[in-house]
Amino acid sequence: MANLTSKELSALEDQLNAELVLIAKYKSMANQCQDPKLSSTFDDVALKHQAHYNTLFQFLN
Image (cartoon, rainbow, N blue to C red; front, side, top):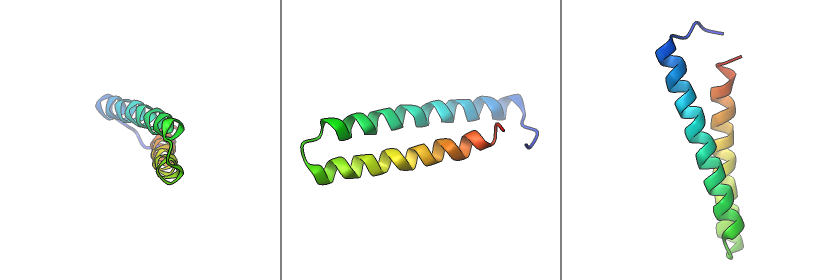
């Protein structure tokens, strides 16, 4: 792991939290959507944000 400053760790934590919010929102929209194609699109976007989260989380390990 790279040596991160406290400012960088704080920014990383903020971004991780933002990604979690986006994942939850897109999953919720997918579940509420009546149009299967649109629901699938929302699921895909949620998965992309999950990938972003996973990539950022790796910096903490």
